[in-house]
Length: 383
Image (cartoon, rainbow, N blue to C red; front, top):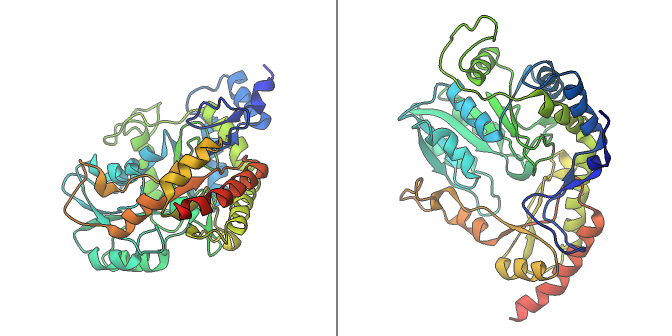
């Protein structure tokens, strides 16, 4: 089998673009190299999890500079497996930030753990390390931190606060693959780092996720969890509980092509971010959220806040430009709701907007979006 012209198709997430001049909020692609590696797996009759997955895991570990990488079904499952690997169960206390995708909380709550959401500063959607320092204790079984949009949490004080009680820190780096802080990749600071390989991430296998760690004991635990607690499929020695959370070699083929282009993907996402930051610098009432792209962070998306967020999104949509509003806070979910108030995180939920982004988003689309925002903003202020 040979790759066909389909390999050049742009993958647009969650939209049906009817207008010829439509600008999607996210744009990436599966290129001919990815397709060729997928077909290699098919031609060699490697369909399930095997040598192709091992090759992908080894290459990912090498890029990130860690001892172990393990591929699984999704970033959400990676988080839950990390919790299971740490022995988290019913009644255990896990610290989770309020400003994150709900999968972070579910990784703890679906296991019966009590997730205690933490607050934010007013100027940064990442969790405030001072809040973690206040609440972490001997009762805490894990701290889950989230590097939103490739922007690093302040890991040094967080690790120090957790370390005083011997509490492991797990990094939800679903939005931060190949983003660096102090020369080190996010997801490699704590006990384990969890990544997403979904369609709206820097490297995609359609669906998928990965766990990385330098702790061989933890790695062996999560590896057994991935296949019903079995060390290998020959002996079928039962080591404990688990499930079918396996990856497959066809996904691994696509993933190999994707991660081998990680530098160019990061460079383009950051070029998109820099173009927005420069072009929107003087728009009154609009703020481009900080990502330290000049220090090695990867701006997966370009995020802005503005008071007239909803009206701006509607006006851009009328011009064929798709955006995405920030996800709601965890405390707004009825099954997670408590009595605590989180005004800072709620502020981001009410004003945040993701602009057209992605490793294959043409810069011409970015310039068009900037021009539209510059034209719309004065009208919104007058109204």
